[in-house]
Length: 95
Image 1 (tube, one colour):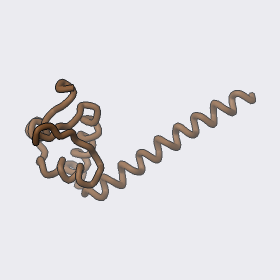
Image 2: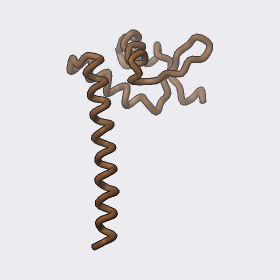
Image 3: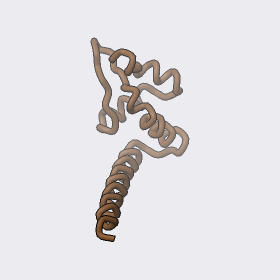
């Protein structure tokens, strides 16, 4: 599991973001971190998501509440797309 983690500090340095930004995302429940022996880690499976949030915040000036809203809307869109695909497949059965 050690290979699947990066410390918040390492991520912060590598991607040039503030540690407080990552902590704020976690406090709002937008991302989840793993804590081991008082060191917080980010799992590799959320890196692309976190990168998107960083771009929204730093490049597009979207605040944390806006990021949370965008995250929720994207989740709903993906859910609706899956639902639509399932319905199309059911319709194909009757063709």
